[in-house]
Amino acid sequence: MTWLLDPRLADCRRIFLQELAVETSIGFHDFERLAPQRVLINVDIFVPIAASTSMRDAVEDVIDYDVLRHRIIEIARSGHFNLQETLLDRVVAACFEIPAVSAVRASTEKPHVYADCRTVGIEVFRMRP
Image (cartoon, rainbow, N blue to C red; front, side, top):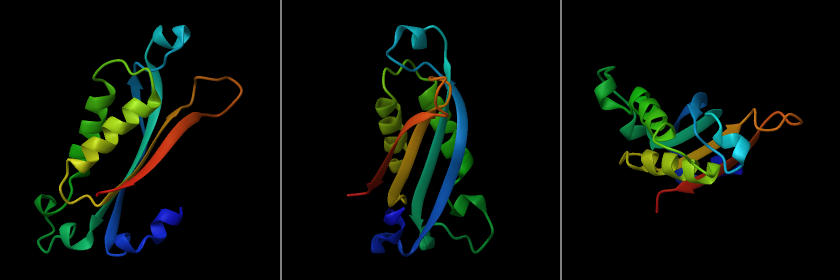
């Protein structure tokens, strides 16, 4: 987690969703195309504290993670993905649709694709250009 030491994130809050479980059509193997699979999606968004603080204690002043959660579910259920990379890239792009987001760390995991390992997945960390 050396990215947490990046000075560009020093004034940021980390908002996260961990192990959001979604049934989605994913995989390029024939056996994966037979039925939707359970995919775990993890997202950390980094938002400047000034853009994620409410003096009124009102959700309208901060990032509403309910909206983010629903958008990720919508993406995951939007169609078939051959690759986790494609699903992950779309999730990250959706996070950056939120103007206040400075950086995103996200991962996907397919915990049931192989009987001989707990999970298989990918992860990415991106900063807003």
